[in-house]
Image (cartoon, rainbow, N blue to C red; front, side, top):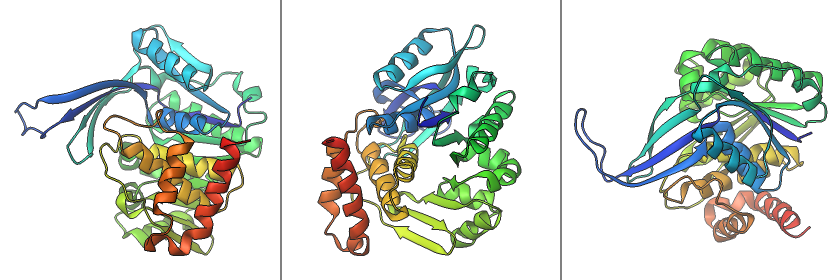
Length: 334
């Protein structure tokens, strides 16, 4: 059974790059277009698998050509697909992603079969030896997927594995109360800065961190884009800088950050090193024109860290950088 189980949406992403976003009612010319298997937890799963983690994914797809691509891509990434359900009526989820020249993206999605994910008796043995359960806030928006995600949470707690949740933008706005109610069951909460502030009723960033910890989350690893990340737990507050990169496409960057933090904590890295690994994976995912998650490799991550390691902003984090490099070297040359 997998070391790390992820539950969430399985989609096909259509990534389109524009020279300029048109005004409402206008027309934009697409320069490049690419089809990728995506969805928040799929992106995280692929990034984890790329680093050699034993990964299983739970979700639901249609019985269509989009599903065939998703299954093939997950198989190539060595992600276990045994708990992926097939819907004979509803189509596979689809997301249209428009990427501006500065790398920012606007997304239009149809969740399709994802919302109909349901728990099965097979899950109990599947969770028996897992070490980490990660799920997406999107799973909480509709039934029966909502109850399925919470059943996964129940199984994870029953088997004493750690749990993480990325609230995601839309659920943070539409289901904030429900997310806050389950925070006491979350070991690592993985919002971005905007989601964190929304969930905390518009508080400033630092107060929002404290609010989420006071609400019960054991640790918060908050993504801040070009400002890096903040990791807070107990009495610790770590502001870890971002790597110097030229951003081309932020699609999946936050999901890749999640992978770095999850992997780091699963294999026993310190919190500072886990934050560094998260920032590194997020950066790697941002430097290709299309989604770069499945294309990254350990060598690229090592090169990125070594390039920045002696810059002034990393002076106080040198030991964390060394810890990550030592781990990656062990994985690359077992």
